[in-house]
Image 1 (cartoon, one colour):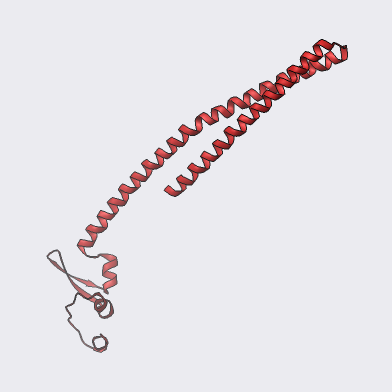
Image 2 (tube, one colour; image 1 turned 90 degrees about the vertical axis):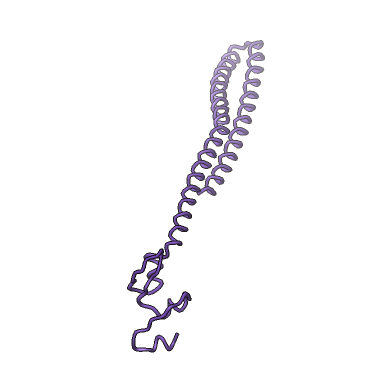
Length: 171
């Protein structure tokens, strides 16, 4: 290789050895698919700009496969999103129901507290006892609704995080 590079004249070289082509050639005569053409540049330029026909077909097949993979990835991503929605929608509905129920119980509790204050001021002992029991039951119901809301929210957040991680892996 050193002798070829040191030679001042033109050298015609026939080889399939890529390292020799890379180190010595600045003009190539290419025989590919039954055609002959001259390429001005080194072997790496040839590969970058044109390449061999057989490699082009291989790259084309790889690109089609990758395109197919992207289509599969989009389909899988859509399925994941659909599954996520299917699992999260009932939890969102439950969260909304519990939130509305808590609001309604809170309003009823305030009304009962107001009635209890009025009954206390008027000295109505039977009504005070009855309203106190109602208020305690309302507070217990609010507490249970808060627990259900918290459980649904935790489950929702856990599923959401799981799907977010799975979707991030798809990218």
